[in-house]
Image 1 (spheres, helix red, strand yellow):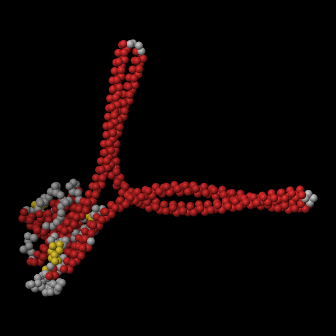
Image 2 (cartoon, helix red, strand yellow; image 1 turned 135 degrees about the horizontal axis):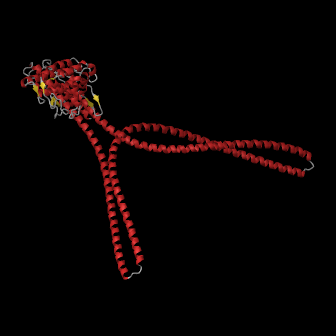
Image 3 (cartoon, one colour; image 1 turned 60 degrees about the vertical axis):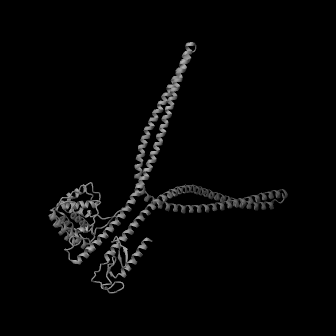
Length: 600
C-alpha cells in the first residue's frame, strides 16, 4: 500500500506539472479534448479509488468513488448545486460516470481542492468508505490537496453533454511523461520508467481479466433472455389458441350463411308453390280458404325461423366480442405470470420450511398409528379371552342343570318305590333341598358373574367401535399423507431444478473466484519480488559463478534476480508481459507446475 501511494503521488505530481506547462504554452483555458487534462482526471480517479472498500452485491463486487464525494454535499452546502446537476443528467447510468462528472464540475468551479480538504478533515466519515491505509486517510491526502490548489489558476470549459463517461477506461498513458527523460537524473530514473511501464502492462492484463468477468455477466444476461424467449413462446401459443378460436368463429359464420341461403331457398320454394296454387285456384275455386290458411301458417313459421336465425347471429357477434376480451385477458395473464414467477421463487423457500414441518408431523402421526394398532391387538386378545370364559361358564350351567334334572328324576322314583320310607326320604329330601339351595346360590353367583362379563363385553364393544372410528380417521390421515407426499415430490422436483440453477451459478462464481485468486497471486508475486540492480550482483544466483565479459548478466522477469545466460535461457509468457520473456530455471519449473495444476 505504501508503494502504491508513493507511485500515485509521483504520477499526480507529473500530471499536474505537465498540465500547467501545457496550459501556460497554449493558454489558461482548456477543453475536454486536451490530453494532459484527461490524464489528470484518470490519475485523480486512481487516487480516489486507492484503498476503497469493496461493496458486494448479487452481480459481483463494486468499487465506486462517488459515495465519498456525496458526503461533500452534507459537509459543504455550496457543493449541493454540483450534486443536483450530476443526478439530473439523464445520460449517466453508473456511479463511476457520476463521479467523473462531479470532478469535471468541481474543477470548473475551481473548488476541487477545497472540497477534498473538507473530506480529509472529516476522516471519521471517510472510514466507512476507505481502509485505514488508503491515500486519503494518510498524510499523502493533505499533500494531494496542496498540489490541487495550483489548478485554481486554470480555466476549464468542459461540456458534459454527448460524452460517454460511464464506459471510459481509466488507463494512464505514460507516453505524455516520457518526453522529459533527458532532464531526469541518469539511469535510476530510466529504471523507474521501466518499472512504470511494467505496471502499465500489469494494469492492461487486469483489464483483460475484467473483460472476461464482463463476458460471464453477459452469459447470465443471455440466460435471462432465454427465459424471456420461453415466455414469448407461451405468448405465441396463446396467440395460436386465439387464431384457432377465430377460425372456429369463421366456420360458424359460414354455417350461418348456409342457413340463411337455405331459408331464402325455402322462401322462394314457398313463393313458387303459392303461385302454382293461385293458378290452380283460378282454374278451380274449390278449397281456396283452406289453402290460404295453410300458406299463411307456413309463412309465419318461416318468419319465426328467420327471426331465430337473426338472434343466433347476434349471439355469435357477442361471442366474437367476448373472444376479443379474452385476448386482452390472456395478455394480462402473461404479464401476471411474469410477476408470479418472482413470487414463486420467494414461496419456494417458505415451502421448504413447510415440507420440513410436514415431515415431522408425518413421523409423529406414524408413531401414533403404531401405538393405536398395538392397543387394538391387545383389545382383540382380551375379547377372545372373555368369550372363552363365557363358553366355560355356559358349559358349567348346562352340567348343573343336567345334575338337577337327574336329582328330580331320582326323587320321583324314590317316592314311587319307597312310599313307606317317608321319614328317611324326608331327611334325604331336606339334604337334597339344601344341596339345591346351595346349587341355586352358585347359579345366582354364576349369573351375576355372567352379567358382569356381559357388561365388560359391552364396554369392550364400545371401545372397539371408538377404535374403528379412530382407524377411519387414521385412514383419512393416510390419504392426506399421500396427497402431501405427492405435493412434496412435486415441490422436490421444483427445488431440484432451482438447485441445479444455483449450482450452475455457483460454478460460474467459482470460476470467477479462481480467476481473481490468480490475479492476486500475480500481484503478490509482483509486489514481493524486487528488481535487483546490476551493481549489487557479482555472482550468478544459481551456479554462483562470477560475472565477466564473456559471462554476462541477465535479469529474471519473474523474481527480479540476476543470473548468467546458461541459468536463464528459458522463456515464458507472464501476465505482466504479453510476449515470452527471459525466466530463470527455478521460476520456469514453478510456473510450469502452476500451469499444469490449473489445467488439471
